[in-house]
Image (cartoon, rainbow, N blue to C red; front, side, top):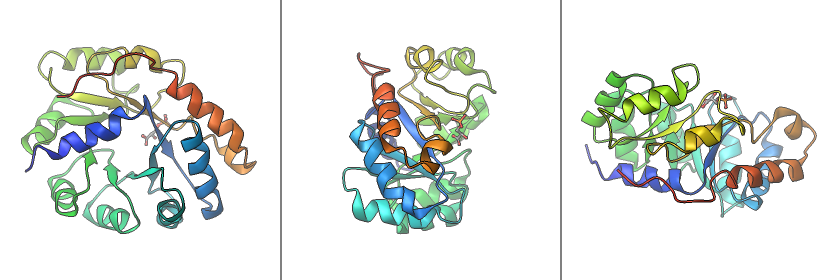
Length: 220
Ligand code: 3PG
């Protein structure tokens, strides 16, 4: 496979310290939510394929929020990847990795941030030319301790830990040399969506952007 495609994923990862993991069940929320996040400085948006409305939400954002860079999350197979690309996704995030998913994303020109939780997962992805990974579920699978351990055999690998990450534990993860960004759902609380409290979401995005005022992790 083409190793160069990981550079595109690194571009996504480097834009802000946090990639928001977004679950939308109402299409009407999609555009104001995306605008609120962009207003707070978060442009890379991971819309998870966890609701029947996810693809319609992605289409709405792709059509109406040009400053957002739309990603699809919870992409589990080639069919998901194709549907996400057709709905306007420009990158894909998956909870794990399969060769068929990797090939589909490559065929679609869709940069993939694949989920890994073990050394073997990383090696399988590296065999297919990938060098940047979502570490999932990060806190349950060892958190900062695991990332430090992977820095030995996989010094060149770069990570976006996701799963259990919060505003409070993110700084310790972002301080690690192999962490480019983190992922998390805390930027889009369900009650803020229900109340259409877009200013709160903009404030949460601003707090997230402020997590890393300094230098970013170097590329692999
Ligand atoms: C994911 O899909 O990446 C996680 O479910 C997000 O985890 P969080 O809700 O703990 O941030």
